Length: 190
Image 1 (cartoon, rainbow, N blue to C red):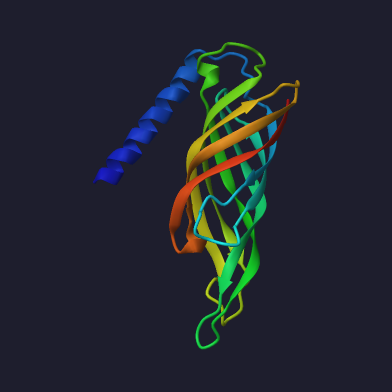
Image 2 (cartoon, rainbow, N blue to C red):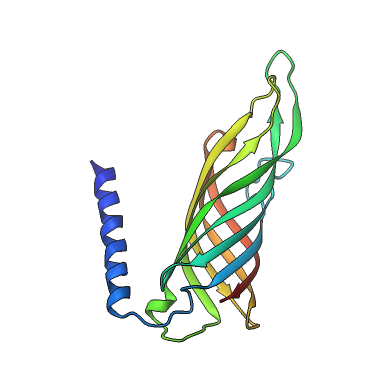
């Protein structure tokens, strides 16, 4: 019951934002904009070695005055465990993939054609693919999701820096979730 209420609340808020954008439609610096990002996510867990650092590259397109959608690809290191009777641990590499959506907040506050800052809520849904052997624990696709926020600053017209921080569920680690920080460079153009 609580999940249905939360889903309804999200739909209502999104609908109100959409109606507000239609009522005050204007030229937006988000709509019809391409935004490419390349970032690095350090492993924040202190009890694991080696670290499962991650690289991601994403491409996003502004479909509304405040919303952009896109996809990401990347790679991550992880520890692969062998099943008994052959126990062991090895370093492995997994491709990372998924889709994302960013809801920008500043177009509601700043009425400019172009702006050097971005402030947004970020969501990602995707996964990892582990090519483990039959005797190893991690095999196949593992899903993950991310909910958080981001900020970007463009000191140059099209080139800038960004940071995203939020909660990520990494199913590859048996459902372990933790907060992550991604930092990198961003390139935008219309």
